[in-house]
Amino acid sequence: MIGSINGKKVEFQENETVLSVAKRNGHFIPTLCEMADINHAPGTCRVCLVDMKRKNDPEHHIVTSCTTPMEEGMTILTRTPKVREMQRLQVELLLADHNQDCASCIRHGNCELQDVAQFVGLQQTRYHYPHFYLQRTRDESSPAVVRDMSKCIRCFRCVNVCREIQGVDALVITEKGLGTEISVRDHLPLGESDCVGCGQCILVCPVGALAEKNDIEEVMDYLYDPELVTVFQFAPAIRTAVGEEFGISAGTNVEGQIITALKKLGADVVLDTNFTADLVIMEEGSELLKRVKDSDPLPMFTSCCPAWVSYVEKNYPEMKEHVSTTKSPQQCFGAIAKTYLAEKMDIDAQKMRVVSIMPCTAKKGEAKRPEFTRDGRPEVDVVLTTREFARLMNREGIQLADLEPSDFDNQWMGDYSGAAVIFGTTGGVMEAAIRTVHKVVTGAELAQVEFAAVRGLENIREAEVDLGKGIGPVKLAVAHTLKAAGQLMEAVKSGEADYQFVEVMACPGGCMGGGGQPRSKHAYQASRLERQQGLYTIDKDAPVRQSHNNPLIRKLYDEYLEKPLGHKSHHLLHTTYSD
Ligand code: HC1
Ligand code: SF4
Image (cartoon, rainbow, N blue to C red):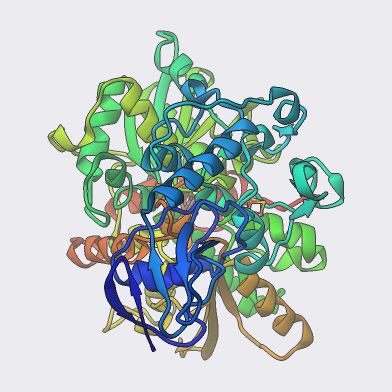
């Protein structure tokens, strides 16, 4: 079918909206609620106005382009004086009911509402109704996510993501008209609800209504306290993503620049969560083999993703003993840093502060779990998301892109294998585990290190690996997104699926798509393929690609832990998920 936009001929399919045809043909129309890649066009922000004229109708109409289907012979004008005037008025009305404390907002400079106000040429806001928005909820009950409804523009993107991508459905739309608010189901505080803190809702929020809990001040306190020794770890998925906040293309490995930046910020010791990802493989791999041999509960589920662990606790408490007892790499890092590293470096563990930089909001909650404490202090003292880390660097005048790279220079925890770095993508923990379990059982390294069957972005992927020697074929599955995890869980419970080992990551794509990662405006998870490719390239180029071949992991067992699942490992690296 054929129509025209701004005088140019356009072709389209039946039922395509004006907005989608315009976008495809390079005509920009501002929007605040629509998000094509999550199939979301509720028509609530009413900013995407256009002038529309039908073929046999002399009248021009101003309509929302996201809800209007393009028709044969239709002519659309996107920038007429009337359209611009009405868009300005619409944005002015949105701002009237919006907390305009922009200078102190977490989204300052990165806000889609600010962008749209500039685009429509707004020069004043004549209306301002604080008595409306100041009554709205500010909910800080979750350790991961803060909801400030005085800034919400009711685009409903968060409701869509939580329901359709994650299948958690913690957020609901309440009331109507001016009273419309996004609430938590059953009017619970977020921290007491079904929310698992994955932060996917933050990634789609166009304004500052949803954000991670801000922990930057605590980190600054530690950095500037001369009595304390700060030990930083950063997660696998940070290095191919944080550059995006500094204009570096997604997928570029900026590991060396991160180390330099942390040193400039005043970090005493800079290390990598990858080291304890290798350690987790040693423990979790051994746990899998033990479960298979001893006929303990199977399948065993991976435990590194705290949003997934929380999802099991809230929705499938009867399956908790299927979750690996091995703590996550973040927590293993804290436990080993405050014991082994403290001993080796002669640091008083009570004066050590472990700071994590994670792509994940749920890691903030994980670090606060009462099980994960050591001598009265948390194993991990504070967690910053990738975005907070970028904000901290910006505050301190550090331009990541301008920095020379540095190396980890630590003889105890400063090395990692390629297997560790792919933890940051869906399927990576499984692939890393198979590399090591194969060697442990068969005594031989896998001929083909890359295990293609668990790669890709299908939401549920299955594979089988034959371990021979009394273990035989092991059935594997990988799931990402909690919606997929829920489906997989139902299949396991009903007996329809008989896996032995299952990796679950809550966020789409795994940690590289974590809720603490850089956002893409008007798009959901726009750069995850580049981030993933970046991680696979680091693995491919790594001199050591299996966790058991990391020389510092061998040293840790030789000099301290003795053996996987041994007495010390049990004490430091394993947990049970209590009620
Ligand atoms: Fe992850 Fe993990 S991979 S959970 O996704 O097991 O957050 O990157 O750090 O702990 O190593 C996150 C990433 C991260 C842990 C590891
Ligand atoms: Fe839903 Fe995750 Fe947001 Fe919680 S953090 S409301 S589970 S999308």
